[in-house]
Image (cartoon, rainbow, N blue to C red):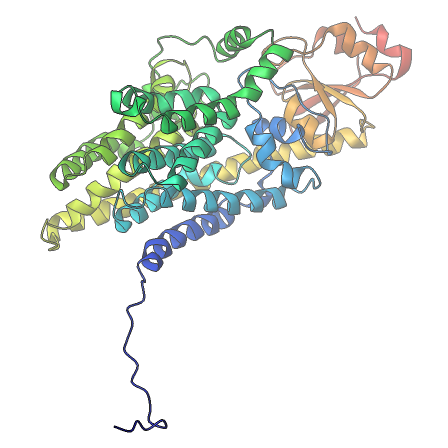
Length: 496
């Protein structure tokens, strides 16, 4: 038989694997939307907060390094160094962190592939990313969001390695997630990984040492710098932990659940945490979390995948313990790792409430869930908008004070002391010093000696009084503050 070479060849369709596109696509959309929401709802020009100025000043040429107290770790300075080391633009730093936090959320959700369906991971990412506290702190130079990312990566990859010991990428993920947490907050890393180490006690795991080894190496990599600094700056790890406990008001049995509830109204630091509880609409979602988590556990048991749900629930519980029961104040950002880990079981629960096991839509219950989620999002946006507005106003006041100090001749090199000296010093490009309190790093005599060489000012917030050595210094006003500017040269010694 002759074959007609000019005939159109018959091409047999070949099945092209397309499973990865739907798996990664929706997750990428959620991460991208998270980045965009940060840029739109948390203006890049909001200015740096108190803690942010401490972290950024460690690597920025804009101002001398601020006092680095015992509870802090060096992860955030490393995180911001690629931008802060050469640019003083707060807006650029915010954009960088917003993009980076979106990428972090994407990686964290991908770490759970094969453990939860794509729809669960997408909804979980959307739930976590839409919390006002997540949106507010995602673009900030703060450690808690990154502990949450590290927790998701570590726990998800841990479960994947237990499921498939040959998954080398997941094994690296365990070490990387643990190291990220330890670089940011070493004690948080220990609390998050406590249930994982308990699981590793089994005989089977002892015969497979790579998984515990990856976690130990990750902890050591991150906490190593903290330990070295403890010996060089604080007299050893025990002394540093004691100093950190004292700064945090003394760690011990302190029920701070009500403090956390009060902080949900947008109080970024609730210390002391007094006053009435906010409107129930603001904290209703908080008390719904354990209920939905329990429903998510029931769904997982019915589906035969209990472990991927039980483990993050256990890690979320241990991550929350110190901030609910061991400190006497609250900050919403402290619970970000717990919220991130709870998001997966909660998403599983919400999706199960929308549809019956056969896939049919539940009209009544589904409508209730949708309306509840929409109301929750409205509350989150309202709290975020008020928090951003209030925070921006504070930071603008600090900027105005710094501008007035420059007008008065307090220009770098210079030194500020008194109320809010640390953040305002960063805005002014000065050093900061305190003679007492948690940030004490000098003496009265040291400040007066410095005043003989460089401009020095003592800042007094509304309702406060100047330090005794600054009472005779000329006083000025800016943004409600009184600014006591030291006389130059030997006249600084005439202060009482």
